[in-house]
Image 1 (tube, rainbow, N blue to C red):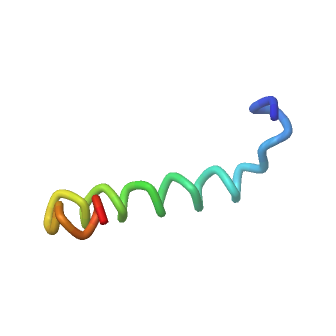
Image 2 (image 1 turned 135 degrees about the horizontal axis):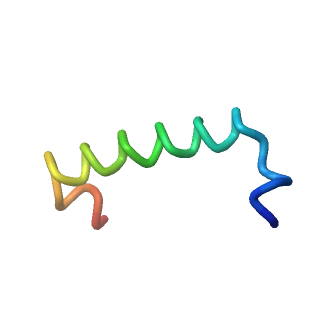
Length: 34
């Protein structure tokens, strides 16, 4: 899907979810891999 098709809200949501996951991954590490 082209970037123009992606909605700004979806993008922001995905970005936030990814940031939260990255933080958890760094904090736990093992859980993120599982």
